[in-house]
Length: 220
Ligand code: DX5
Ligand code: ZN
Image 1 (cartoon, protein in one colour):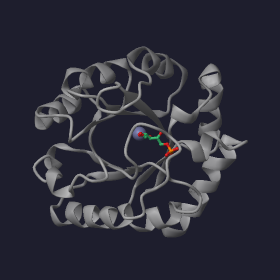
Image 2: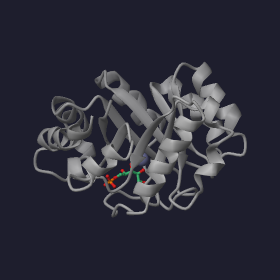
Image 3: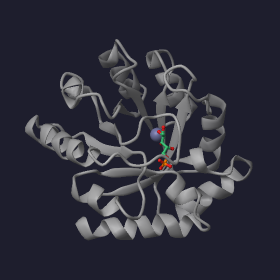
Image 4: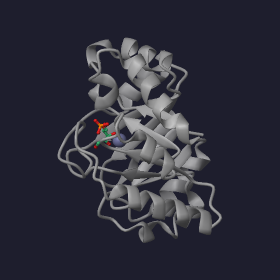
């Protein structure tokens, strides 16, 4: 399985419903929603009310990426707002096992997000409680950044670690994914690739999603 998850961070918020319909038409099943608090990352984006509105307007899988400090305070609230997947950063949560378990108990898939310079070894004890790992391939905070090339090797090592530990956690990669690198990303073991600017800065977001899916399909 390989999916493209368009990130609405680069969408036109005044036409959000249309933008969402367009990426769905292109073949996307997962919608990535970046939640930033201005503390964990140097940017502020959107929160619970927007997730609630999106939930009413689409049946796509809603994937909320919480780039916030103390995510355990809010993770279950995002599930209640309609998120199907919730990821929290390993760097931000001192009680990660509790947060992941709470997200699962609330009925959503629980994910651990990890920044580019954080070693994958920090994930080992949380892996049994995670449905997916969100591997950041840029430093979080902004769309439109360049993919950090060494993250391909990190992705391969993460895949090996997951297999070696008998985990069924999926790998989602996030940041700088585009038509030039998506096939290599799929080949290295990612199951889901987030794409923000490569989709919504394109004239035709539906065609952009379809193009990314086609490029990656060589490997699946
Ligand atoms: C970055 C966000 C990403 C971002 C990706 O902090 O987590 O999801 O929207 O955007 P692109 O694909 O433009 O790098
Ligand atoms: Zn994200």
